[in-house]
Image (tube, rainbow, N blue to C red):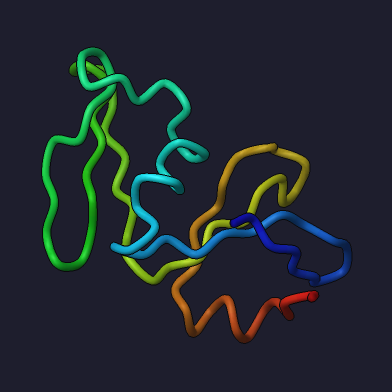
Amino acid sequence: MIKKCIRKEHLDCIQFTKDNQDEVLKILEPNLDGEHVFIKEETDKYCLIEHLGWCKAYYYYNHWYVLGEDRDYLWNQYSPEDFQEMFKLVE
């Protein structure tokens, strides 16, 4: 599920799609429980997660998420075009 990509260093990355939504959300939103953290809205373009009125997170289908870039240990989002320009997948 999680792949490796490279820019100047190896980073974990994952592409979010409708087909892998459940698996990827377990990684991106480990506290997704349907009660306090839940899917608020789904469209053809994105899935909106709400943290019980505290914050909202949009996850866009077919975008890439890269972990730990700039030492922040968060998943940073890239469009398919930006990801292709900035990174190379490592097998």
